[in-house]
Length: 330
Image (cartoon, rainbow, N blue to C red; front, side, top):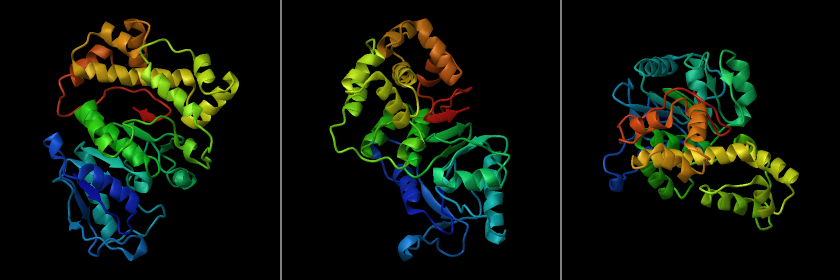
């Protein structure tokens, strides 16, 4: 896979891509062989006077996956460098291969029209600029990432990791994605959107709210009443609902459904459980309820999902659509 380094590199996002796709992982068997590449004759420059020695390329067609960790948010005069980048990315996209953009990286496919008529996201700081420059793109705010087939965009900075872990889950299943997430010492999936990261003060008091959510995750198999969660968070129901939306980007009931769907996906991927048993393990009232929510979220039935994902097919991709507050997936 290729990590495209712009002439001016954002080190955090580049580091995320390198950590996820370039780091040897012998415990996982065959994994990605990542290379940081550039179309620039000069070494890409980063903050602090740092310059990078990258692999110089003239094409991206030797790679199966392309990650664009950053790009200029300001329109630049088209020169030989930009022309070669645009042409290479267009050729890569035309093959249907997967492209992941981190943070400002969404500006590159938007500039060359790959996002026209699609939804996309980027860091909340660039939202106004993005919407003004790319009116043919439907900007989606307050999400961690937007996924549309072979082109997926993450929001600012650490959301790049969320998108990458989700990519690994789709391609290789929960076990591999969770293994990489554990290596990064992070949750395999976060809930909520960008709003929770904007001017959010850190509480100095015991976090009963987080403890309530941890309890819910540990007890998904059982009925969970929102009023009980509010009590565990030491909040009134009204205050709990307000804090939940501010922190997680969705209502408590929708969050619980999302968590149960995640549990159902993992159980289905094992290939060992019936749909009825999966519904019970994930805390749904019945298989009918599971099927309703599953199809609404993912566009396919649990049985179809198990057929596609239960065998750990090498190329795993959801069909259809659905949307969540954390990730938009079409």
